[in-house]
Length: 181
Image 1 (cartoon, one colour):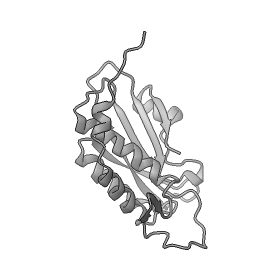
Image 2 (cartoon, rainbow, N blue to C red):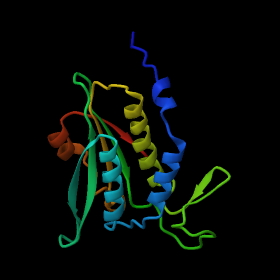
Image 3 (cartoon, rainbow, N blue to C red):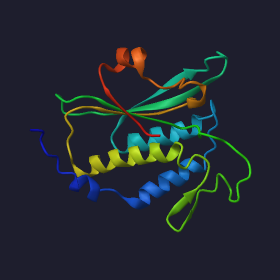
Image 4 (tube, rainbow, N blue to C red):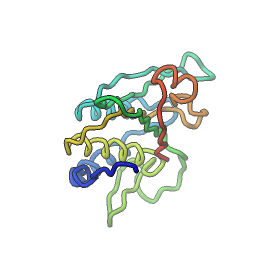
């Protein structure tokens, strides 16, 4: 029989104001494919501030080796003995289109909704995952396995920054994967 985990402490530690603030800060940063450096810095700083070990990984454009960008890899260390979980989302917005009736980088919050470029695909997913992990840390919950948070670049170029498959397994060992979008 699987053990039951009490999620109440982590749920109680979610700070809605911090979630909204990080989402709005994310939306206000333009992050087209291979132009994600500023949002990568934001997420790296945030994850470091909540206790993650963070490294910045350089990614080379798959079709233009002169073009480079960066992405953070955050590791929340577990106590040992548990599986590693890799949470993966992307920092470049899913579709960049014209015709907005609000400023796409204004991060307008109204009636419980947030409006802006990438709010749901996939900055919202990255923010939700980072803030959920923050709640786990703030609640004092100890995980056995490590959690890797990988907000990656260039999902529109075949996931150039995604550390999965053979490449990721060589680097991180065996892991279970959760995709944000």
